[in-house]
Length: 265
Image 1 (cartoon, one colour):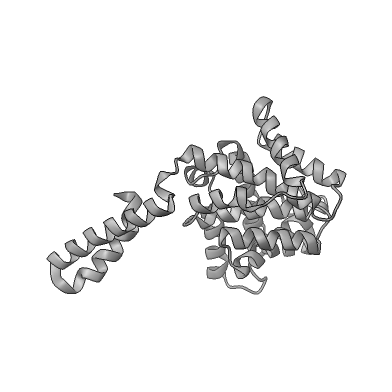
Image 2 (cartoon, rainbow, N blue to C red; image 1 turned 90 degrees about the vertical axis):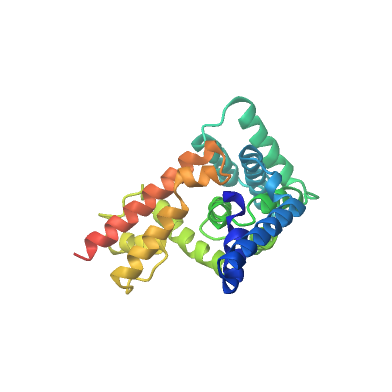
C-alpha cells in the first residue's frame, strides 16, 4: 500500500466531493491506476539491490565518459576515480567492476542511455538520489576548478536522461563549486578559521546568499541534511558502499552551517 500511496491520496482527494463513499472509491481507483502505471513503466519491478547496482554502474561509466570528454584522460581524473573507489572502500571484485565501468565509459562509442535509462526508471520519483549522482559527477568534472564545454555537454545529457531540470542542475553546480574551492584552498571540512573566504564558501555550500535571513538559512540547511541523509539515500537506491561519501557530505554541510551560525552571533 505504501508504494502506491500517491495514487491512493490523489484518488481520495478527487473523490472527496462524493462524500466518504466517493473518497473510498476514488482511493481505490487511484491505487489501481498507480499500480498499473508502475507495472507498465517497470518501476514496481525494481528491488533495492537492483537500484544500487544501476547507481554503481552508472556512476563509474559516466565518470569515464566525463574523463574522456576532452579527448584525453588526465592523471587527476584517474586519481579522482580511484579516490572515490577508496572512499567507498572497494576491494576485490567490486573494485574490478568499478574500473571496468570506468573504462567502458571512456570508449568513444559508449552510449550513456544504456546505463542512465535503468537508473532513470528506478529513480523516477527520487530527487535526492539523483542529486547525489550529479554531485559525484560534478566533483569529477570540477577537478581542475571548472568543467569544459565537452564535459558540460555530457552533464547536460545526463540531466536530460535523468529528468533533472536546468535550474536544479545550476543550483548544484553553484554549491559544488564552493565546496571544490574550499577543498582546493586547503580546507579539510572546517570552515571556521578560514577567514572571510571560508565563510563565503560555507554560504556557497549551503546554497544561500550571505544576506539571507535566519529562517532561509535554517530551511536550506535542513533541506540539504535531509537530502544527504545516508540511511535515507541507501534505502532509496544509493549503494551501501557510498554511505561514507554521503556521511562526508553531511559532515561538510554541518560544518558550513556551524561556521555561518557562529559568524552571526
